Amino acid sequence: MGAAGQFTYRDGVAVLQLVAFVVYLGCAFLLCSRHGFSRSSGWVILITFSLLRILGASFQLATINYPGRAAYGGALICQSIGLSPLTVLNIGLLSRVNRFVTNGVTKKIFTLLSVASFAGISLAIYGGTKSAQSPDPFQSNSEVKVAVCIFAGIYVAAVALFLTLMRQWRFIPREENKLMVCFALCAPFIAVRLAYALVADFANDPQFNAFNGNVTIFLCMAVLEEIVAVALCVFTGLRLRVLPKDGAVMTASDSEVPDGRSESKPTAE
Image 1 (tube, helix red, strand yellow):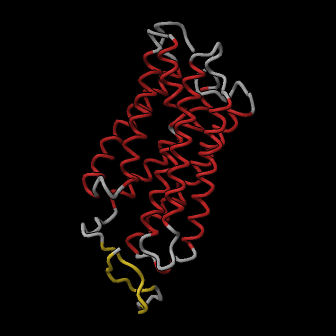
Image 2 (cartoon, one colour; image 1 turned 180 degrees about the horizontal axis):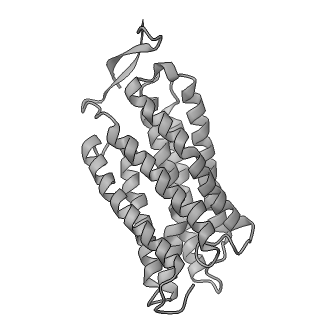
Image 3 (cartoon, helix red, strand yellow; image 1 turned 60 degrees about the horizontal axis):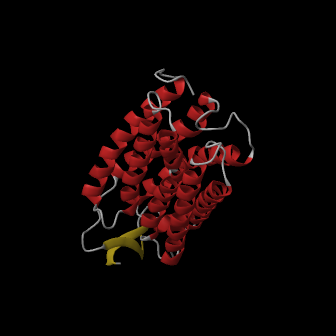
Protein backbone atom coordinates (compact mmCIF):
# COMPACT_ATOMS: atom_id res chain seq x y z
CA MET A 1 0.00 0.00 0.00
CA GLY A 2 1.32 3.42 -0.91
CA ALA A 3 0.98 6.75 0.81
CA ALA A 4 -2.26 8.70 0.51
CA GLY A 5 -2.54 10.36 -2.88
CA GLN A 6 0.04 8.07 -4.49
CA PHE A 7 -0.88 5.88 -7.48
CA THR A 8 0.79 2.50 -7.02
CA TYR A 9 1.39 -0.69 -8.99
CA ARG A 10 -1.55 -2.25 -7.13
CA ASP A 11 -3.78 0.62 -8.24
CA GLY A 12 -2.68 -0.02 -11.82
CA VAL A 13 -3.85 -3.62 -11.46
CA ALA A 14 -7.19 -2.28 -10.20
CA VAL A 15 -7.47 -0.12 -13.33
CA LEU A 16 -6.87 -3.22 -15.46
CA GLN A 17 -9.66 -5.03 -13.60
CA LEU A 18 -11.97 -2.06 -13.94
CA VAL A 19 -11.49 -1.78 -17.70
CA ALA A 20 -11.78 -5.52 -18.33
CA PHE A 21 -14.89 -6.07 -16.25
CA VAL A 22 -16.71 -3.00 -17.52
CA VAL A 23 -16.36 -4.60 -20.96
CA TYR A 24 -17.46 -7.97 -19.59
CA LEU A 25 -20.46 -6.36 -17.90
CA GLY A 26 -21.62 -5.04 -21.25
CA CYS A 27 -21.06 -8.47 -22.80
CA ALA A 28 -23.01 -10.09 -19.97
CA PHE A 29 -26.06 -7.92 -20.64
CA LEU A 30 -25.72 -8.68 -24.34
CA LEU A 31 -25.60 -12.42 -23.65
CA CYS A 32 -28.58 -12.25 -21.31
CA SER A 33 -30.62 -10.23 -23.78
CA ARG A 34 -29.78 -12.76 -26.46
CA HIS A 35 -30.25 -16.01 -24.54
CA GLY A 36 -32.81 -14.81 -22.00
CA PHE A 37 -32.37 -13.75 -18.39
CA SER A 38 -34.64 -16.42 -16.94
CA ARG A 39 -32.99 -19.51 -18.39
CA SER A 40 -29.39 -18.40 -18.75
CA SER A 41 -28.24 -18.39 -15.15
CA GLY A 42 -24.63 -18.62 -16.23
CA TRP A 43 -24.83 -15.29 -17.99
CA VAL A 44 -26.77 -13.66 -15.17
CA ILE A 45 -23.96 -14.78 -12.85
CA LEU A 46 -21.51 -13.04 -15.18
CA ILE A 47 -23.30 -9.77 -14.44
CA THR A 48 -22.85 -10.40 -10.71
CA PHE A 49 -19.20 -11.33 -11.07
CA SER A 50 -18.42 -8.30 -13.25
CA LEU A 51 -20.12 -5.96 -10.79
CA LEU A 52 -18.17 -7.43 -7.87
CA ARG A 53 -14.86 -6.96 -9.64
CA ILE A 54 -15.81 -3.43 -10.73
CA LEU A 55 -16.77 -2.54 -7.16
CA GLY A 56 -13.65 -4.17 -5.73
CA ALA A 57 -11.40 -2.28 -8.15
CA SER A 58 -13.26 0.96 -7.40
CA PHE A 59 -12.76 0.48 -3.66
CA GLN A 60 -9.06 -0.16 -4.26
CA LEU A 61 -8.76 3.04 -6.28
CA ALA A 62 -10.69 4.92 -3.61
CA THR A 63 -7.94 4.07 -1.12
CA ILE A 64 -5.59 6.39 -3.06
CA ASN A 65 -7.23 9.41 -1.45
CA TYR A 66 -9.30 7.74 1.27
CA PRO A 67 -7.18 4.93 2.77
CA GLY A 68 -9.66 4.08 5.49
CA ARG A 69 -11.31 0.92 6.77
CA ALA A 70 -14.47 1.51 4.75
CA ALA A 71 -12.66 1.43 1.40
CA TYR A 72 -10.41 -1.49 2.32
CA GLY A 73 -13.35 -3.33 3.87
CA GLY A 74 -15.40 -2.98 0.69
CA ALA A 75 -12.51 -4.21 -1.43
CA LEU A 76 -11.96 -7.13 0.95
CA ILE A 77 -15.59 -8.26 0.81
CA CYS A 78 -15.76 -8.01 -2.99
CA GLN A 79 -12.52 -9.96 -3.26
CA SER A 80 -13.75 -12.67 -0.88
CA ILE A 81 -17.06 -13.41 -2.56
CA GLY A 82 -15.85 -13.09 -6.16
CA LEU A 83 -14.75 -16.72 -6.40
CA SER A 84 -18.30 -17.99 -6.08
CA PRO A 85 -19.77 -16.51 -9.28
CA LEU A 86 -16.60 -17.49 -11.15
CA THR A 87 -17.12 -21.17 -10.29
CA VAL A 88 -20.90 -20.99 -10.79
CA LEU A 89 -20.34 -19.41 -14.22
CA ASN A 90 -18.47 -22.53 -15.32
CA ILE A 91 -21.10 -24.81 -13.79
CA GLY A 92 -23.65 -22.94 -15.91
CA LEU A 93 -21.81 -24.13 -19.01
CA LEU A 94 -22.18 -27.74 -17.89
CA SER A 95 -25.80 -27.25 -16.90
CA ARG A 96 -26.67 -26.30 -20.47
CA VAL A 97 -24.75 -29.29 -21.88
CA ASN A 98 -26.56 -31.56 -19.44
CA ARG A 99 -29.86 -30.71 -21.12
CA PHE A 100 -28.80 -32.49 -24.29
CA VAL A 101 -27.52 -35.85 -23.05
CA THR A 102 -29.75 -38.89 -22.63
CA ASN A 103 -28.38 -39.99 -19.26
CA GLY A 104 -27.46 -36.63 -17.83
CA VAL A 105 -26.67 -35.60 -14.29
CA THR A 106 -29.71 -35.11 -12.09
CA LYS A 107 -30.73 -31.49 -11.67
CA LYS A 108 -30.54 -31.95 -7.90
CA ILE A 109 -26.75 -31.95 -8.17
CA PHE A 110 -26.73 -28.55 -9.84
CA THR A 111 -29.22 -27.27 -7.25
CA LEU A 112 -27.04 -28.57 -4.43
CA LEU A 113 -24.00 -26.81 -5.86
CA SER A 114 -25.97 -23.57 -6.12
CA VAL A 115 -27.04 -23.85 -2.48
CA ALA A 116 -23.43 -24.54 -1.45
CA SER A 117 -22.37 -21.48 -3.42
CA PHE A 118 -24.84 -19.25 -1.59
CA ALA A 119 -23.61 -20.67 1.71
CA GLY A 120 -20.06 -19.82 0.71
CA ILE A 121 -21.07 -16.30 -0.30
CA SER A 122 -22.79 -15.76 3.06
CA LEU A 123 -19.71 -16.91 4.95
CA ALA A 124 -17.42 -14.80 2.78
CA ILE A 125 -19.52 -11.66 3.34
CA TYR A 126 -19.65 -12.26 7.09
CA GLY A 127 -15.96 -13.10 7.25
CA GLY A 128 -14.98 -10.12 5.11
CA THR A 129 -17.05 -7.77 7.27
CA LYS A 130 -15.55 -9.28 10.41
CA SER A 131 -12.01 -8.90 9.04
CA ALA A 132 -12.62 -5.28 8.06
CA GLN A 133 -13.52 -4.51 11.68
CA SER A 134 -10.61 -6.42 13.21
CA PRO A 135 -7.21 -4.95 14.23
CA ASP A 136 -5.61 -6.74 11.25
CA PRO A 137 -8.14 -6.42 8.40
CA PHE A 138 -5.97 -8.31 5.91
CA GLN A 139 -5.67 -11.47 8.01
CA SER A 140 -8.05 -14.24 6.89
CA ASN A 141 -10.42 -15.51 9.55
CA SER A 142 -12.09 -18.90 9.88
CA GLU A 143 -15.23 -17.83 8.00
CA VAL A 144 -13.28 -16.69 4.94
CA LYS A 145 -11.21 -19.89 5.02
CA VAL A 146 -14.32 -22.07 5.11
CA ALA A 147 -15.83 -20.05 2.24
CA VAL A 148 -12.74 -20.56 0.08
CA CYS A 149 -12.83 -24.30 0.85
CA ILE A 150 -16.49 -24.39 -0.22
CA PHE A 151 -15.68 -22.63 -3.50
CA ALA A 152 -12.79 -25.02 -4.14
CA GLY A 153 -15.03 -27.99 -3.36
CA ILE A 154 -17.69 -26.70 -5.75
CA TYR A 155 -15.15 -26.49 -8.53
CA VAL A 156 -13.84 -30.00 -7.83
CA ALA A 157 -17.46 -31.16 -8.13
CA ALA A 158 -17.75 -29.23 -11.40
CA VAL A 159 -14.70 -31.04 -12.78
CA ALA A 160 -16.33 -34.34 -11.79
CA LEU A 161 -19.49 -33.29 -13.66
CA PHE A 162 -17.38 -32.38 -16.67
CA LEU A 163 -15.75 -35.83 -16.71
CA THR A 164 -19.18 -37.45 -16.35
CA LEU A 165 -20.55 -35.51 -19.31
CA MET A 166 -17.45 -36.28 -21.36
CA ARG A 167 -18.46 -39.94 -21.26
CA GLN A 168 -21.52 -38.96 -23.30
CA TRP A 169 -19.66 -36.76 -25.75
CA ARG A 170 -21.23 -38.43 -28.79
CA PHE A 171 -24.70 -37.43 -27.61
CA ILE A 172 -23.83 -33.73 -27.36
CA PRO A 173 -24.83 -31.76 -30.49
CA ARG A 174 -21.93 -30.20 -32.36
CA GLU A 175 -23.25 -26.71 -31.63
CA GLU A 176 -22.90 -27.36 -27.89
CA ASN A 177 -19.46 -28.99 -27.93
CA LYS A 178 -17.85 -25.58 -27.58
CA LEU A 179 -19.20 -25.39 -24.02
CA MET A 180 -17.19 -28.44 -23.02
CA VAL A 181 -14.12 -27.07 -24.78
CA CYS A 182 -14.57 -23.77 -22.96
CA PHE A 183 -14.76 -25.50 -19.57
CA ALA A 184 -11.59 -27.45 -20.33
CA LEU A 185 -9.72 -24.31 -21.42
CA CYS A 186 -10.85 -22.41 -18.32
CA ALA A 187 -9.86 -25.22 -15.94
CA PRO A 188 -6.12 -24.45 -15.57
CA PHE A 189 -6.76 -20.73 -15.07
CA ILE A 190 -9.42 -21.31 -12.42
CA ALA A 191 -7.24 -23.94 -10.74
CA VAL A 192 -4.41 -21.41 -10.41
CA ARG A 193 -6.88 -18.79 -9.15
CA LEU A 194 -8.18 -21.15 -6.48
CA ALA A 195 -4.63 -22.15 -5.56
CA TYR A 196 -3.80 -18.49 -4.95
CA ALA A 197 -6.83 -18.10 -2.68
CA LEU A 198 -6.01 -21.27 -0.72
CA VAL A 199 -2.36 -20.31 -0.24
CA ALA A 200 -3.35 -16.77 0.75
CA ASP A 201 -5.79 -18.00 3.38
CA PHE A 202 -3.96 -21.01 4.80
CA ALA A 203 -0.19 -20.62 4.26
CA ASN A 204 0.15 -17.31 6.11
CA ASP A 205 2.62 -16.25 3.43
CA PRO A 206 2.73 -12.43 3.32
CA GLN A 207 3.52 -12.59 -0.41
CA PHE A 208 0.10 -14.09 -1.10
CA ASN A 209 -2.17 -11.27 -0.06
CA ALA A 210 -4.43 -9.35 -2.41
CA PHE A 211 -3.94 -6.07 -0.53
CA ASN A 212 -0.45 -5.91 0.94
CA GLY A 213 1.33 -8.88 -0.62
CA ASN A 214 3.34 -9.26 -3.82
CA VAL A 215 1.41 -7.42 -6.52
CA THR A 216 2.97 -9.36 -9.39
CA ILE A 217 1.94 -12.67 -7.84
CA PHE A 218 -1.58 -11.32 -7.37
CA LEU A 219 -1.66 -10.11 -10.97
CA CYS A 220 -0.33 -13.34 -12.49
CA MET A 221 -2.15 -15.85 -10.26
CA ALA A 222 -5.48 -14.12 -9.68
CA VAL A 223 -6.31 -11.12 -11.85
CA LEU A 224 -5.12 -12.39 -15.22
CA GLU A 225 -6.60 -15.83 -14.54
CA GLU A 226 -10.03 -14.32 -13.99
CA ILE A 227 -9.76 -12.06 -17.02
CA VAL A 228 -8.74 -14.92 -19.32
CA ALA A 229 -11.34 -17.36 -17.93
CA VAL A 230 -14.16 -14.86 -18.34
CA ALA A 231 -12.93 -13.93 -21.83
CA LEU A 232 -13.17 -17.59 -22.84
CA CYS A 233 -16.71 -17.83 -21.45
CA VAL A 234 -17.82 -14.62 -23.16
CA PHE A 235 -16.30 -15.66 -26.49
CA THR A 236 -18.06 -19.02 -26.23
CA GLY A 237 -21.37 -17.47 -25.22
CA LEU A 238 -21.37 -15.09 -28.16
CA ARG A 239 -20.96 -18.06 -30.52
CA LEU A 240 -23.75 -20.16 -28.97
CA ARG A 241 -27.02 -20.66 -30.79
CA VAL A 242 -30.16 -19.28 -29.19
CA LEU A 243 -32.33 -22.09 -27.86
CA PRO A 244 -36.05 -22.13 -28.74
CA LYS A 245 -38.23 -20.13 -26.38
CA ASP A 246 -40.52 -23.12 -25.88
CA GLY A 247 -37.69 -24.92 -24.07
CA ALA A 248 -37.13 -27.51 -26.81
CA VAL A 249 -33.60 -28.86 -26.94
CA MET A 250 -31.72 -31.36 -29.04
CA THR A 251 -31.09 -34.80 -27.60
CA ALA A 252 -29.52 -37.83 -29.17
CA SER A 253 -31.64 -40.06 -31.36
CA ASP A 254 -30.99 -43.66 -32.17
CA SER A 255 -29.97 -42.87 -35.73
CA GLU A 256 -26.35 -42.28 -36.63
CA VAL A 257 -24.86 -39.70 -38.97
CA PRO A 258 -21.97 -40.58 -41.32
CA ASP A 259 -19.18 -39.51 -38.95
CA GLY A 260 -20.44 -41.88 -36.28
CA ARG A 261 -21.94 -39.23 -34.02
CA SER A 262 -25.55 -39.54 -32.97
CA GLU A 263 -27.95 -37.39 -34.95
CA SER A 264 -30.07 -35.09 -32.81
CA LYS A 265 -33.68 -34.13 -32.92
CA PRO A 266 -35.72 -31.57 -31.04
CA THR A 267 -37.64 -32.61 -27.98
CA ALA A 268 -39.43 -30.81 -25.20
CA GLU A 269 -37.50 -30.60 -21.97
